[in-house]
Image (tube, rainbow, N blue to C red; front, side):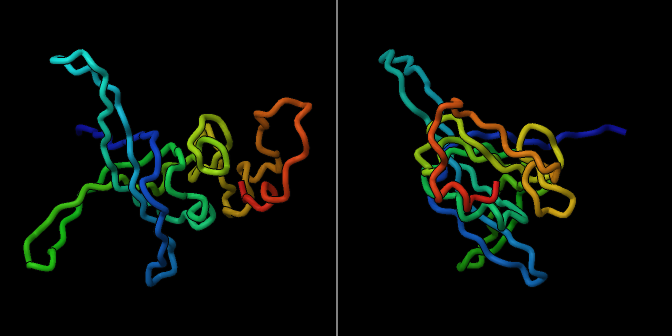
Amino acid sequence: MAQSLNKVMLIGNLGKDAESRQTPSGTTVTNFSLATTARIKDAATGDWKDKTDWHDVVLWRGERVAQYLKKGRKVFVEGRLQTRSYEDRNGEKRYRTEVVCDNFGLMLLGDRGGSGEEGGGGYRQGGQSGGYGRSSSGDAPGGGMGQPAPSHEPASSPEPSQDDDDIPF
């Protein structure tokens, strides 16, 4: 029997603040748009131009991280493609392809202010390595191991501000 793979990995910037809602069963679902940009050399003029693609992302059970998904924030998204159909207001059938993050992941990149600079910490859903995992209970950052997140700052850096303490990852 043939196997298949449906996996998407994107690094880009949020086009607007994420919007969260609850399903009737109480599960949090967060939607946001992600812009990825590639530099392409124009064959006619030889100039470099930016080409931006937009991706619709659906994040399941992201209640702890949704408040940090602000416009301009650089994120890494890992998930799968899913196409769904719906009828618009005129009764015409439309299709929408989305990147769905459920058991895969999301990692915040850049500084905590959302300027999109490289570096910084992150939050990762699911049990995969490479981020700050969630424990089986979903309560503790760091995979429930009681370990603090690795610091990317030099040892002589000043103490973090009060604002840094209320971030759950």
